[in-house]
Image 1 (cartoon, rainbow, N blue to C red):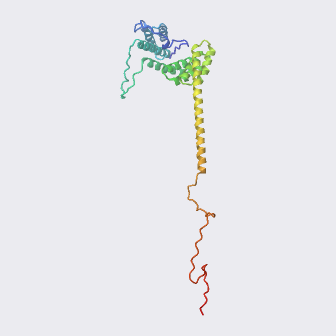
Image 2 (image 1 turned 135 degrees about the horizontal axis):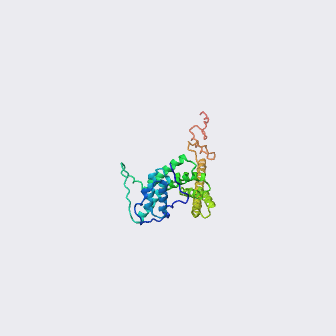
Image 3 (image 1 turned 90 degrees about the horizontal axis):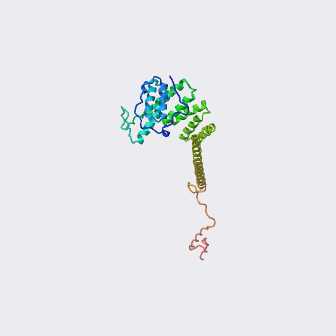
Amino acid sequence: MSLALAGCGGSADPANVPVNTNVSTTTAGASEFTEATAALSEGKRLMDENLTEQAIAALKRAVEIDPDLAEAYFHLGIAYDLLDMQNEREGIVVTQEPAPNSNSKKAEPKKTQSELAFEQAVKAYEKWIKANPKDDTAHYYLGRTYAKLMKDEEAEEAFQEAVKLKPDDTEYQTELGAILIKLAQYREAIKPLKKAIELDQANGRAIDLLEDAEAGRSRVDYVSANKNANTAGRNANANTSNSNTSSNSNTSSPTGPKPPEKPDPSRSKTPNPAPKGKKGDSQDGRPRTVPNKP
């Protein structure tokens, strides 16, 4: 299996490359290539000249000759991205048919040619890396391919491995910082971006990304500080409320039966009136002796 890997300054990304619209849909002589690496080189040259459709034909020829040529799939995915951008600017709508044999009422659309090419690139890079785990360039391009597929966590893992194998590459450090920013890991992104600038002080992309990372870190720190302050305030209020509740419960009247009231000595009972004396009784009610008559 062969793997033709470009250096760090390979073909530019679609967002930065204008598309030449005055080209035919086929490349004369593309089928005449008998070596995959030669077809790949031609495809890259045509992309540099903005001859996107001709580049696609040459790159397709490269993967026909060598289905394991990872870099050809990678550049083919970029070329299809460029072609999609061209169609969008010209108002050409490419309808994506639903996937066949789908029982879902909302079947997902078929994948774009670009996505399919990048997926093939992932397979080819992973196959190569399995046999050549110390190939830093393969890990780097695997990371870029995952990033194209919006698989940021997988991209980060690949870039981390590339940086580990070759820490003095400014592009590796830059791409690692960029993907960490996409993952909102701003604090972690600062270190590789500073390293990238240290390796190349003219690395404008790393400089811009470093500003973004530091700004993101400041935002996260600000939000975290406010969150901690609010949490502390709620806890203080909760403690105060619990304290008040405990105090009130200690001073409240018991709910059990009340003990009998003790008599108040200050209250004197009104004495019962003396009974009226009966006949033969003295005034005080005691019996008296009545003398017998003579």
